[in-house]
Image (tube, rainbow, N blue to C red):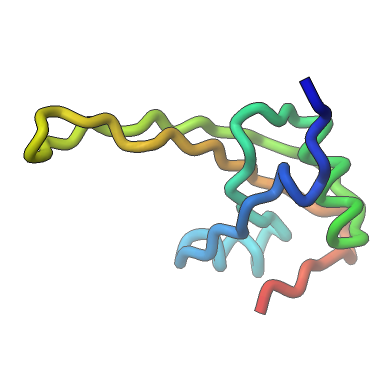
Length: 95
């Protein structure tokens, strides 16, 4: 299996009201990541792509819900999120 590149690991930032509060108050950013990536790979990808120092990475996997469609029950896709805490004085410009 080929190794994941940093651009493949980080899919997109997740910008929500709760996430924006965490960015401003706790220096914590949320990203949707590849489900195959582990915490060390996510940390290295964030440090490479955004040129910041990461203090901690917390991950969460959200299983896809089942929806009733015309063809029967269909499972929606699964997502993995990473909540990344940066070291003091570091910041990421998302906007």
